[in-house]
Length: 312
View (tube, rainbow, N blue to C red):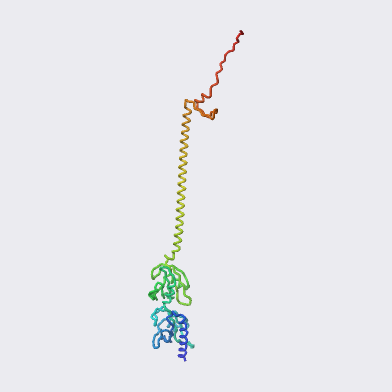
């Protein structure tokens, strides 16, 4: 009958769930409920215990919407483990379409914490897992206090706009509404799950490589400027020295010209004969006094009458 078919399906599903549980030892457990929501079998379920999940959102959704497949619930404290878990569930339906319960596997949030611990984030970096309702599932900055932010509304206006647009990935810059840190973040939707992950790095750390390159470039520019200034100063000093040397040479030439002119004046006006001679015969220069000595006037010719002298 209908009850026997339900029990048979529940037993088969419990066996498959137990086998999957062995393959995924970090799960809190897989359990099967009846149509009223009471746990009937699975990890940690004791006979006679009346633990009901009838008020859990995933149970109500699966019972109300027969076409719903795999459902991932928001984080909740497990009824059996008392730990923060995410419940992944699927409805059990009989051949005649009747609802027979759900099978649910609980994944501890600590599992995600261990995954986050393998990631190397810069100081101030943040990794957040959140659902489609923009509620926090877990934050990497709360590895020692799991559940401190679970269920809180999350997301800057920039992130909310990206998620609501239907995009599966994106990058943006915004200041966190949780800790106020300005970060550059990238988000991605997890395929086949109503979950999203966003990783953010503080702008101060994100721009460190760029700042290092900028400082190196600035240092090179300053060094080039200093070398250019030094060379310009050396050229200017050489030019000034050359200018001073030219001025001194001109002054010396003027002094020599003055001395030469003075000497020429003294020589020319001297009453003594002064001359310059090359070798022994060739006179190259002489003053007026020497001129009068060297160049004698032609002898005066006296015209005497010639007289005849008588013989004897």
